[in-house]
Image (tube, rainbow, N blue to C red; front, top):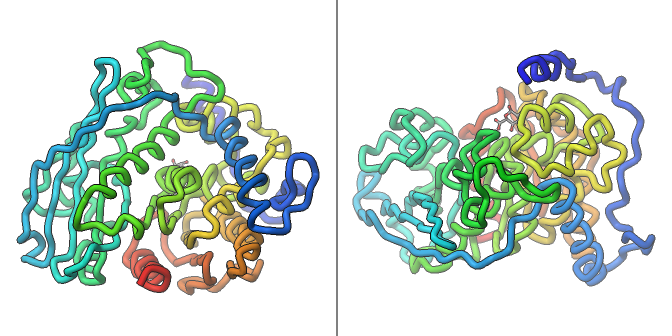
Length: 398
Ligand code: GTR
């Protein structure tokens, strides 16, 4: 109810380190039956699958099983985009199952100066494809009436192209319109959901659907002769950072995962309860996680996992976690510590993570196979963020 929502909003967020309730994090390197994990084989054979199923059942929810038919229709393939520096492609992806159809519109820019298959940043957008650039040829996304280019500051296209990367994006509404009663309009409808149907307690909702969408775009990228599908960098901001981490955990085809200010239910440790909490996120966004996650409202210590274990599921692939100083709602320190602790799994592979539990100075990228920065400014995606992600991708992919 509205009243309930007001009560939730009124619940005051904590930002004071001295008021964090004491907690012990679940042991990352210990199996359910108490065995210590000391090798990458044990991690891959036992602990990793264990954690994946806990996150699926208790946090993000499972996608229904069942084969979905997919077809691709190229609506645009223009070699003189961005003043001739890029090729713009627009692909309509149609999903069908049991007579139900859903469509996603993929927009891509690929650098013309690279003559081999290119690495690609896959980064879903919040407001519609047409908002990432003023390019008048971008076909507007189905669920958006937003103005062309209004998000352009978050999408430094020329910088990405000049660095030799492609960009692939889809409006996230194409997979699940971000609203609490939109299940039947989302891709879940392919699996038989109708308005008013109950979602099972461990059933995936919006985040699971966005993560599913990330993987379906990857399926397409594997078929594109201009793309090096072994070098796809999956990037997500905020709620889409949560989805990217989950997609990267489930789908090891993603070569690198970047979580920009992903906060609660993303990179941030839930047990710290700084800024946004499990209770608050489940009440304000009841359609994001699975219903089981609500069991932990105000009971973070009962969680069988914490978010450092989600980050560890990306290992041994390179992982970049980033925060912003002014984005206290996402708990920058909680995102940082989580990334730091995930390093224990990278060590099993002889790799280095952040190697510190001291928050670095602002605007300084640190780390190795796991990297981190906290920049000045607010909750956003900036050139500083992109420059660091490009440098990170250069380091591991080139
Ligand atoms: C906020 C939400 C955060 C984050 C953010 C965003 O309202 O509390 O978890 O997802 O939205 O997506 O920008």
